[in-house]
Image 1 (cartoon, rainbow, N blue to C red):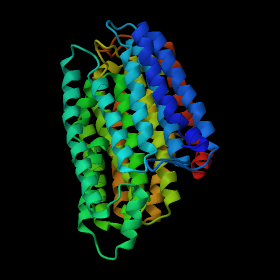
Image 2 (image 1 turned 120 degrees about the horizontal axis):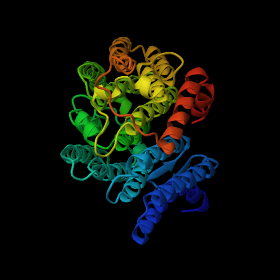
Image 3 (image 1 turned 45 degrees about the vertical axis):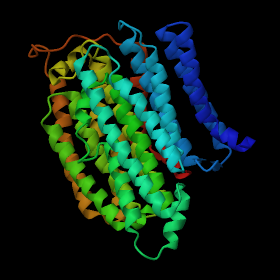
Image 4 (image 1 turned 90 degrees about the horizontal axis):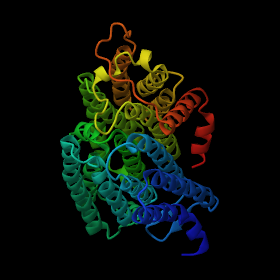
Length: 478
């Protein structure tokens, strides 16, 4: 590895070093605030390393990893999300009994897995990054001891994640048996040299799609999502909904662009069916929920279906347009989802989470600032103008129009209409007058770290909804 490759790879090294340092600090002295501080500093150092890596341009770091603008942007998105989750974790766990310092180590190792995942150019780093991320999440989901729901959610995630990993490995094995390549570009070269349709490669890609479908909770691989979202601690749920799903989707897009998998129309048909079912089932099932975390879980299924519209359009439009649409929507989705679960986290404690809709009755009168933030996040998820979510859906719609995906665009419109109903339902419940509200939940104490993070997320939400050109200019340079 030469100096250019070392500098390019330094962000991943910094994340790994941060995890080791936090682990050593925990071994010497248990102090939750110190562990949070060191984890946050480690992420900030990694972000500084990203700026140095960006000056190197696109660098192939061995055959396993490519550090380019796309991967570095994805890493920055994951690391900033991890920083927000750490802020929520501090206020959520600081007064909780027991030893919670390992939580920060697990978050850093999950971020390490996600960083390896979004820069992967080989099946080895594809699988290593995914498993590093997933194994950390098993423990994070069941982190609060003594809660049956949390342990049940962790067990379900463990079993189904194991099944998805088996499917991924089977798909990789089938592709390797035919192509003799594990590198994405090598697979693309092999497929380009073949004149006939290759059934073995197609089956392998379908297995990979099924495995990734579990990670993204796309229908029909979505059954774990509401239980895991409900059972996991609120900050961990925010982490799963953003970092985990975002890293897998960014890797999936890179794999299809680099390996030539877009040439298989039947695979795109499978994605089309999954997108339609995810949008339809996600929104319809969210309508039936009185549990806010389960509602947001089904909502996230629908949003992954929306993202698939731009992904499928990649077979017909220029790759840079696909990357622009997907990355901007993911950035908007990250901000909005972190903000929504941040409000849930502030209103919750490890002993009792604010998951029932009744906990939000009269919130406008008890915590007007918190209610206003939650309202903006919900409106952004619904795609209302002047929010980042609206601009994100606009770019998805534009990609669908360019690719003439009229059926999927119709589903996007129908899904957005259904989503608006259950988002407004929560807003109406929050606006119930205090006098008429006899079932209001307790007034939550606002943590400084969580409050500052929510303010920043809200500013970003409105800024990107009013003036998105700066972020889009950055994305267009990928």
